[in-house]
Length: 370
Image (cartoon, rainbow, N blue to C red):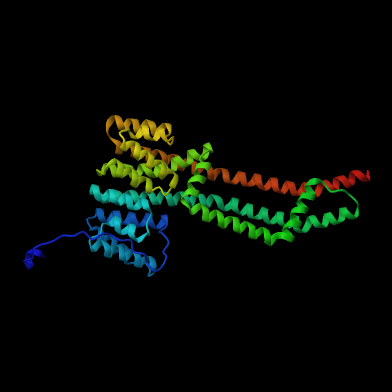
């Protein structure tokens, strides 16, 4: 266009990207939507269709609504010269991990692989979520039935027995008196207890949104060994996946550490990574940094040591992400398998307590008659 119009460039100025706050609030796309969207986008780009054209082809058949308008605006931003990662981040419609991986793909020039990785990742995430929901349906039904049964026994059946035993001058056992006291407390002060519970819940949610409160709560929970192990596995799985892509695309280590940590959305882990970045900046290795911050695991130490010895950091982090993918999937299967027997045990315990509360006075009355 410049040659045809015989134009001459006098000045080039970069227009800074700004976060556009839309006049409505849009929920972020779900894992199911993200999986199918990026999978189709990857197939189109592999077929040779430009990224922008592929984007508009996928957005066109979507039903009209706020989400479609936001996706159309992303396409317009890309057409106007914005990078895809910046356009997606500005829309606040996609997770941070998506934007970080796209940024790595832009640097490496391998967008097709990044889009395919995103599609597979979100499809696997949605599959695990669906498995967990299906595993919780039956235990949830049993738990709801148990709660209704207990409420009926405590609020309707137990008072009848209590009145009968009082007329017979039979002393009630401690368990029966405790259930009756709980019933009276709920009847006379139910609204007050509900208000206190809602107030405490609101205070807890508001406090958890504060950075210092979340840091303190997470630090306290991290003292539990099992929770610490699962939390670190989840954080390292996301961190390592993004780190591998960024290092393979040539992004400097310090920038890659910060971007990968921000994509985890965990303030405690991000704080630890800030300290690790300071250690790396002062001349220490990344392995020494994570060991000093006490966030390393035996497998992680071994793989990073291999990466430092061979210089293939991206391969080491890719294997770390694959390992923790497998470990998280195994834990999800175990949790699904344990949900049903734990619910049955809880249901049997609760029903047993109610039956004992009804039978013990009868046994005491029969013993007094004999």
